[in-house]
Image (tube, rainbow, N blue to C red):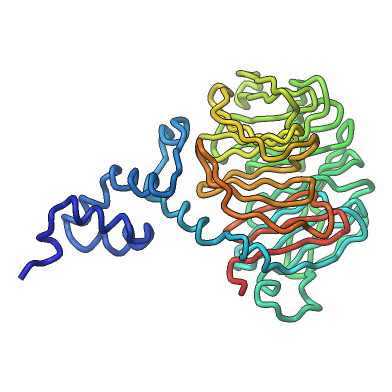
Length: 388
């Protein structure tokens, strides 16, 4: 009687191509030495990725920590997660009186999923994503409301550590906050020289960009004490991007340039001038994604800022509000108003897109399968991972 393991290796590989990647890696691979050898060979994962019509750029696959199987698992997860039908199933909440320009999803050490939103009404709101997911206790979806958190429009929020997050706004302040059992507590703040447009954190350092062309680094361990302030651009600096543990910082500005800075010496390494300026950057797995006002999504090699690929997603100016690159997808928020999800890599294909949103979208965040899109009417729409 012929057993499965007696089949030719080529036939086993062909069968494995149709088995879900996560099952292959975690369930099939440990069965025996033969299966471990087949599943551990990168050639099989090349075949699976090719079957999805995805071509990964060299700048991604040459990364030291790149893992073919993990990448394939994420590709499958995103393909299964997002369809036009799944984007119709959303929950909208309203907690602000004006446009929501800052949104950030995070998870606390107690495994509570929360979403922090900041608005032009100057308030911060913390939402309980767990309850929004279950569609229960509508009255308690809003965990905390911090009115007058800033004295100007709140423009950016970033998470830091376990329970902390930072916010910045047009009042020139960067502020640190802490989520506790009793609510949201202010920790410290720093006043800069102009409206602050973006804030990012890497635990020990907080970096902001401002309307007066500057990038400022502050010490997160010493109550946001200013460390250095430099100008690498000739106009307002809209967005910053960095990866945990990396010494490199990327910025984009109204001067149409994307700049790479070495944070160890605070020296510019390279730059690129785009045809239309970028309002948003996203760094992931050896790739830098830019969303331009000319309606293009531009993929760059972050090592030298060379253009890897360009995709025209809208035909009119001021089209791309924000982009986010994930291992298994590339997301794009547009002004028209719609939200699109593409396959990653050199040949992006549309996975899903929303129907026209009720209000003009402003920003979004995506974390662990949960998506939050903030809009101009003060509402936030959620697509949660465990939703119906």
